[in-house]
Image 1 (cartoon, one colour):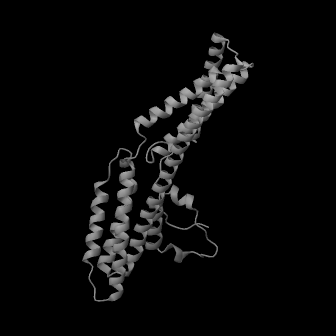
Image 2: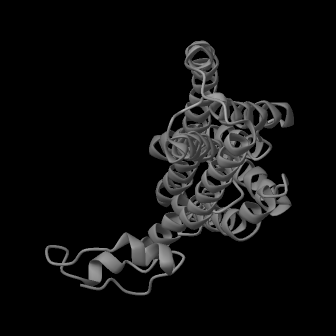
Image 3: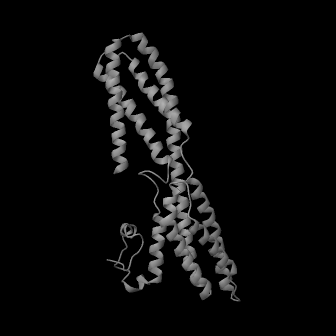
Length: 284
């Protein structure tokens, strides 16, 4: 709701300012030249198209980037959950240690690292936990082939988790370059001012045209801001995947599914997220 309110405020303000400026310019110049309108229309079509293509490409690129980051986070969270579950098939000592480390990693990511990424930082605890998970998995030795097969799968998961975490941390450094902001803002203002040069017979129609152009441009620039900073702002990504991991860990350790009739019970994922994954019972 906050992002929607800010967006409406920006669009409304820019449209209002553009309409007022258009009326002021019209009163000062009183120009109504059909030939001038024809020439200005041709130029506006070229310049407007170029700016629209540039702005559209940037919006699409930032949205795609946000989607890729979200998928990376979900993949990382899935990997941790897989390590936790696979650890149940290891010898008791190593399995218990890996399960505890998996829980500690999720806790450190949700409680420490997520907030740290807003300032382009990372959690030392999360980094140390990943190292300990590697050490524990590599140190696992058993004469049973089943244990070694599970160990191999856990190592594969840890490798993918490490890659995903590095991508996630690097993406926290992502931002829209200053020069690109300058181009977008200057271009938007220029396109809006260009509409003032048209000498329409109706002042209200010309003001409406300027307002529509300004509102549309400002809305798309606001989208660039929302999607260009994935870990800050009102549209920032949230650690929902890791919160779900907490629920999975809770559910398996407390064997919650063994205590309910699974044919009539559903799990509301919104409630899981609201409770940060700490659920003591499953409700019908």
